Length: 311
Image (cartoon, rainbow, N blue to C red; front, side, top):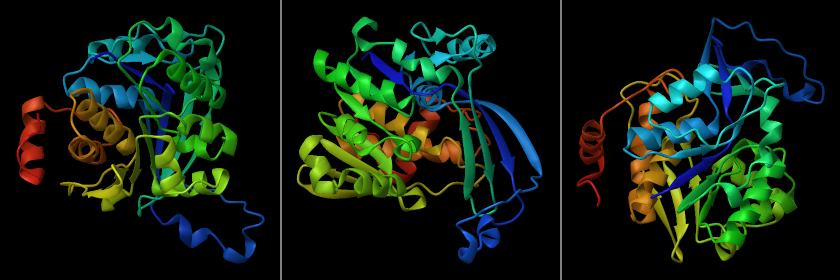
């Protein structure tokens, strides 16, 4: 199946804070916050939602097409992605900008405070599904908000089933933009906090989203995920990690596993279980793409938790 993954391409600057952010947030002074956290370590990693999702798909035997914009510093990253089995022919390199950057501090409770520099991501609307070639399934993950709305409109117009994954852009997008992406989607996916933002901005609850999309998937961290489809709610459990190292990219890995299952014709529950296993591998390593496994190793771990491998 031809899968196109859209979203940000970025470099991640990952920092660790040896305490808890919440201990330094004073409820009586939240109207004026001025804080600086001294971190113990910093790592620069390849990141961005679209490459993270694509990486999991490639590990699971697919060759996804990455459709995104990157900056003048993308050369080495492109080479690495191609070596990992990801088709970058649809990536546009913007010569006068740097690739987007994600600056994230994580505390001892896995709480995160992050900032995102847009960079070349601001040019994402220059790309189009109308000229991308054959696509059997697409995911619209966090990107330039205008481009995300454009991609959803194009997918509906040309008949491409798509997953709408607003993610971190729930904070930036308005209610009308979120509603536009939801309408006609095969799947809407977000975490529980992001869904509350969607609810506030659009006035849509679970039933309202289901009226506009085939399925709604709400991820809940270590509590697994809820799938709203076929008139009911299915709970898919998370997989217990062997260690917890870094939550960055865990949600993207889940989405990559979910896409693998849907591309293989599996139902939402089976696809989400693949996503749960993929997410755990990411949680056990620093950065979103520093882990690896063979398909055989992945299936063995899946079967150890969920039983017979589907399909």
